[in-house]
Length: 208
Ligand code: MD3
Ligand code: FE
Image (cartoon, rainbow, N blue to C red; front, side, top):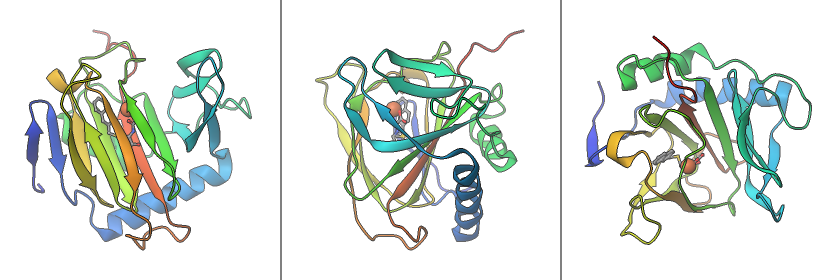
């Protein structure tokens, strides 16, 4: 397999997990999904301010946010349609990186324009915190920051490039994290520029 770097317990970084050809085919699958289902603009709970990141989900459930809160739901908030299926190529990556953990139920596709960012937050809308989260980056380089399970804990930053993979599990699963900035025009993968991040997640507890 590719290079594997443990950034801290529970966080494993796979620089250039996807080669250029794999990035291009994943990009084209994302374009096809967006063409059929459309990115949507999430808003922050309570105040309803729009998030700068645009989103789409794949899978039986997807993460959405609006004035009433954050949740997983089976349908697109704008069209009411079910989300597209998670691509087989992504299921294969999940199986490899998680050693065949129960299949992911949600793949959140985040699209960052050159000015978009995501503030420090925890991912805690899933029932199963034992399951790892797998993240894949495509397009422009991003400055990613990860801290501890306390908001004010020390943080470390790494640049995520197109093709990089990350897996978060165990002691890092509830760590605060965010995207501080996108480095404009650092990749030629996306004609329109910007960055896609895909996160694969188990939402419910595996049965059996
Ligand atoms: C650390 N996305 O969608 S992926 C998110 O690049 C999110 O779009 C960022 O944070 C992005 O919630 C970062 C890396 C990531 C994903 C899940 C995590 C880091 C994580 C869960 C726990 C700890
Ligand atoms: Fe997150």
